[in-house]
Image (cartoon, rainbow, N blue to C red):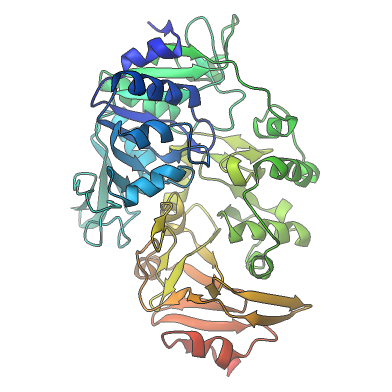
Length: 508
C-alpha cells in the first residue's frame, strides 16, 4: 500500500548500493525534487552512496547543477547507464575524468531491456548495435577507462542469426514524475509531455522487490479513468506531492490538453523557442543543408528528424507544403504533430498519439520509418558515421542507433568541415568564403554510431547532404552524386577529401 510522504521521508526508501532507474527524457519530466532530496540527504549523512543510475534517455536540466548533477558530482554514484548524456553538463565532464563507471547504450535498447526485466526476463535481444561501437567485438558500451562491465552487452547467435543481448542490473528503486494521484494511488500523466518507460520501470522494480517513488503535482479526489492511469496504485510505494511552479502558457501546447491544428504549429513552436531554444545565430550552411535534405520527403512518409542541423528540414518541409502530408515521430513516443526542440526536445506540439517509449522503438527497430534525418560529427571513407563522440567530449548515441538501423532512407545532414566555415548563398549559387579547419570526412571515424556495412546488408538508401554537395553510400564507399551551383568540384570537394570517392558520371 502506498504512502504519501515528504521528500525527506521518501529518501529512507533508498539505500547504499541501490540500482535507481529514472523515468525522464533529457531535460523533460525529471522528478527534480526527488533528486534534490537525495543530494540533501547525501550531504548530511554520506548516504545513499554507491548508487547505480539507469535512464533510457538520460536526465538533467541542461546546466551544470540541479537534478542529479549535484549528488553525482559529490561521489554518491558509482555507475551510470544511459542512452544520452546531453542534458547532464557536469556529469559528462566527470565521466571523461574517470570519476565513475559510465556506459552508453542505444536508447531503444535500454527501453526494451527495461520492458524485458518487467516481464521477468534478464535482458532483450536486438539487431540494433551490431557493427557499431556498442558491439563488444568493436569497442563495447564503456565510455571511459574504468568502465569494463562486459555483462551489459553480449554478442550472441540464435537460430543462426546474430544479435546483441542487452542486460541491465536488477532495478530496485524507481524515480518518476507524474501529474496526479487519486485516493487509490493510481498515477496519471495528464499534464506531462510523455510517459516514457514509466510502466516498465515500475513493473521491473516491483518484480525485483524494490520501491517505486513517484513525484506528483497533486492528489485528486475523483478516481482516474482506467485508461488514463499510467501507473496503477498497486505498484506504488511512495507518493511525494510537490506543487509545480507556474509556467508559460506555451508549454500547454505540449500536454495534448487541446487540439492544435496544422495551421497553428508554427505559432506555438515560435512561442516555445523563445523560452527553450539552445540555438544561436543564423546558420547559413544549416539552411542550405535543410533545404536540400527536405527534397527527400514524399507524401505519407513516416519520419524522424534529429536535433541540430536536421531540424532545418522541418522548416523547408513547411515552406514546400509537404510537412502537412507526412507524419513526424519522436523517440519519446510521439506520433504526429510537430516535435519541439531545445530544452523540451522529446515533447510534441499537437501530437496524434503519445505512447510508451518501448513501443516507439518497436516501430523504429523493424524499419517502420520511411525516412530519417540525422546529424553527424564524422563520416569515413566506408560511409560509417560517428554522431555521438567528438574530441574530448561526448553526448551519447541516444535513439540514433535505433532510428538509423533499419529505416528505408537515411539522410545524414552535416557540414563538409567545421570550425571557421563561412558560406554565402545567393539564389541557387553557393560560395565558400572560408573553409573550416576541421574536416568532417575522415579516413576512419573515431567511433562508429552508424555502420555502412550493416546498411548495405539491409538494402537501405543512405545519402550524406552537406552545404556544397551530396554523397550516396555504394558498395565501394561514398559516391559523389551532386555538386551545388557555384562549387568547384575539384578544388572545394575532391581535393579536400582525405580519400578518393567515386564520382557520378553526370558530374564528369
